[in-house]
Amino acid sequence: MNKILHQQLHQFFRDLTAMGGLAASLLLILLFFSSPLLIPLIAGSGITAGIVILIRIFYFKDRPKKETYSNFIERIDASSFPSLHAARIVFLAMLFSTHFANQYLTILCTVTAALVSYSRIYLQKHDWIDVAGGAVAGIVTYFIISLI
Image 1 (cartoon, rainbow, N blue to C red):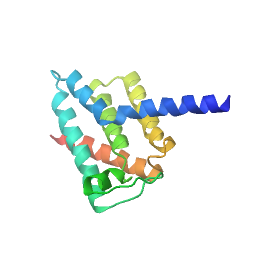
Image 2 (cartoon, one colour):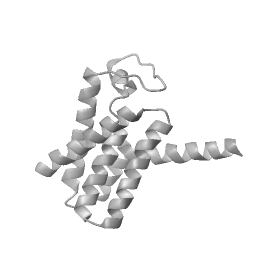
Image 3 (cartoon, rainbow, N blue to C red):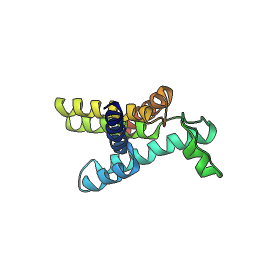
Image 4 (cartoon, rainbow, N blue to C red):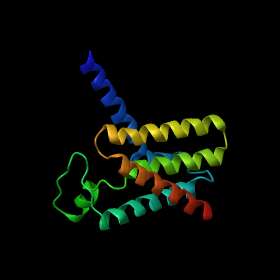
């Protein structure tokens, strides 16, 4: 029974973590193509990735399950700090919460951001520091976008 529960939990978090991935961001951009959120979504996706990549270029930290790399691009991807998934989902949660100003959506966004962030730890892609750094990057991105 425990093995089945563990497998189901692993699959749940593996699927959930995709909400902080590039494909989810691109899907949201397509869904909000004719919306005032289009420019903030595109800019936020680029800025978030830029912040994380810049940090990873200058600071390398192994993932909890170390990944091997043989070139510069793979090295950036193998770096753990900060979590790009956490940065993306925190940015999206803040953007949607403030844009729609709905209490229930804000709760849903907050819970989703917390679960996606935790999924990165559960799947041993990041530790708490990586996720916290990603959350800060997402918050910084949101405030940069709100200035535009």
